[in-house]
Amino acid sequence: MKCSELLAMLNEYVDGTVDPAICEEFERHMAGCNPCQVVVDNIRNTIILYKGNEVHELPIPFQKKLHAAVRKHWQEVCPGDKPE
Image (cartoon, rainbow, N blue to C red; front, side, top):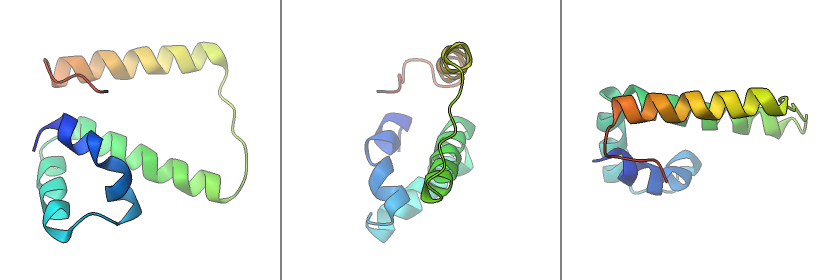
């Protein structure tokens, strides 16, 4: 499984609506792909935060810096496999 394939089905995976065989592929991929592990962990943590209905705003400059750092790291780790 490629990173882009994992990202395409990420919502279903996190929601638990993906076929168990595909879940096994997700787990194998994430075992060897730290960027995908980080993405999935961040989504899970975001869901946990939002379940409490608390708003946690990040300053715009920090958001931009974080976005740029994640994109740069992704391109270094997965060259040619751009996140969508």
